[in-house]
Image (cartoon, rainbow, N blue to C red; front, side, top):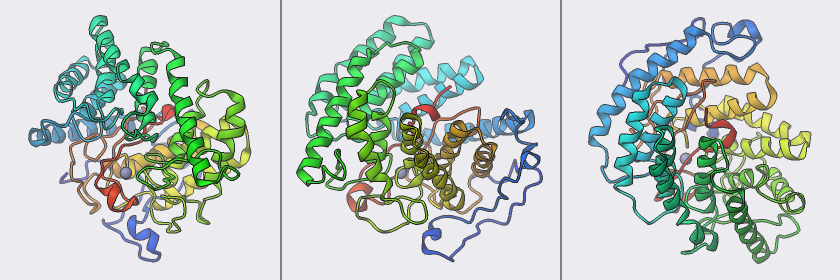
Length: 445
Ligand SMILES: [Zn+2]
């Protein structure tokens, strides 16, 4: 735990922690947002300029807090599970963090650390799951990028080849492979996208990506047919017999990827994906939030994995692709929900914590250039920089990329995110490890 607040924003009122608001049941899961909302450029002058560049002062506050938290993390990792290879809770996640720090700060020692940790991860591959965050594909993809950056093309190539050896089984869906992001086809697909983004070329031919998307579409059409809901939603997906809505296991995460440029043919986007996106849109609660599953009327969860902080990416992408203003309106409403209810008691992680929720603001800022959203992201970053002072719960795997204490670098210097065990999916889901905000536009350089 951090013993002192090394940073609070000048001029902002911070109450004693924790501050609970019991006025509504749904808000018991979140702490009351103590920050003043954006009122104009004047209130953000200590944070960023009119072009959205962080001030030197704020950037250096973030940097020094990252250094502090990294030291705590390194110490905590001494007792971490030596066999956990994953990006979600294991060594690949730590490697990804250092890779990202190298991208942001350019310090070669970060790249060396990424190499050390990814080598550790590669020694513990499980051959059980195939996804970026919970399976072997993530460690292989991250290793390929680390080697590429170290200018070791043969080692990079070997990792890419090993990654592609999993490809056929993913397309065929061997072992009842689901389609969702954490354990399914899209979790593998993300590994391919990750390679292409970081190599800055089509290292993996687009046809590979299209074929996986075709398999995902066929699976969704079959499920819709089985459920006899083709009229309402031509695509439908299940994970553990539940129709999840959120980004991690559900419909919104799947549709977000299907709407990426060039992944799915335009006519199929119009007559299959768009009406399915509209089906998700009409599940919206009056509050602007979304249920964890189709048919669940409880408006409780506001995390990346379940609720508006994950659905927002699908909405913004739908606005970009189809140009329908209502999608953006719904996304802006998600932003309001996150601002009101996004400082969750579950902690600071990417999957169901404040840092993951903050990415929604960055996505809105990118889509609208409205500085209000950047300001809100900065406030959530301030919350995260006061790590451990709010009475939030400690996750099971605190020294991990997705569960918590890894310093998550929010704000316009950009970010990678964190998570924790999933909620909202009932008993079954709580026994599974979930994964997090791997949204293309919000992750990266
Ligand atoms: Zn989660």
